[in-house]
Length: 470
Image 1 (cartoon, one colour):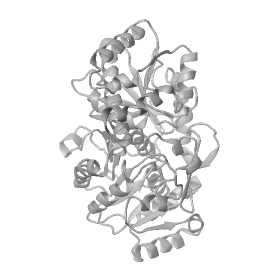
Image 2 (image 1 turned 90 degrees about the horizontal axis):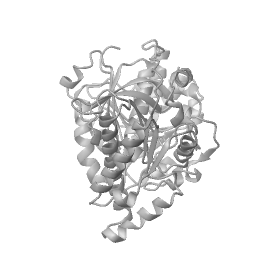
Image 3 (image 1 turned 90 degrees about the vertical axis):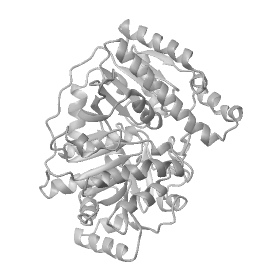
Image 4 (image 1 turned 135 degrees about the vertical axis):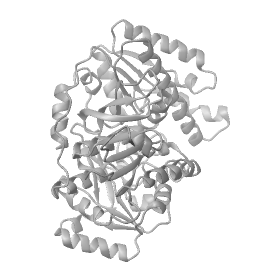
């Protein structure tokens, strides 16, 4: 497997690095780019086998998604991979108005040689389970938490932009596309592989346009990978949609058939004296991590989001940047955040702004993601440029994409695992202050309470995570 075998577009940065981690751990040399890669760009990474493109479509309207995704899929398809994947969050949070997965499937299917789109959302390693078409999620990733049906999940059901009110993914997707959705359920996966493949073929021959795949146990990953890979190999790539369960399944299949060997030779990054954490997450999991970090010596900067989302925020941003630089120079690790969770009063204050701007609440959320993400990116750039900080963490899916674009990052390669879904990466940003820094992107649900503190000394954490990834 020396040829380019897999490409994907990630709908935000945290999810994109999650997929990067899975592919790298599976044994593929993988690179994540921030703009559509050309073959000239790939030449800098000899032997690359998997290519990702980190995007922002999770926070876009359908019209904006059209402008974003069509050239992205065209560029990835032009690389002639075996697979082209639209990578979404494992909680599938989306709506007809924002981050429409249905619209992404419609666009992506035009770049596929297949008449149908496999849809795999479950990922047991992340605590996401799809059973009879209904999605269930653990409360948090990286620690033991209760499993909820998604419409009752304490975070996903209250997402500030795209709350999940429906756990049946067929019904949820039907609001976003007219494509016919069929299901390979958990009982079909219990059959011998050949019988499962026959059921899969019958659904395709019955003109199913999207085939949703249940997933409950890790042992089912190889079977699912077999089902998907058996449909690839045409003149155009097989287009699929879903979580990093897609990468997990294909990796498991390729390892089971001897095409790949799991990677075990992870780097052991040196301990650092300081870490900079910036968070645009509203998750209570991230809120608990912020509280833990502050109680263990991290300095805290709580941003005035109402000021940052105003057009004229430069003086405030310069003030915060100076405070941040001073704290780092004094020897402190720092956590800069927009909230301490979904009950933070700052969220309520920001929510009042639509009436003042004469825009809808939905437009306000999108505006805030862009403004706050750009502000966080500027703060990171200032800190790295003026101090000796070497390790950074960005928390929050929507804002992380805009923060990274603001920093000028062009590509990422994985250094080592931390916890599943949030690998430590090396950033490439030629000519920019952040070139070469160590950075990880943490989704709102990822990690235990001590996650930010653990980033100071990663050796033990990396060893534990690498065992999970095997």
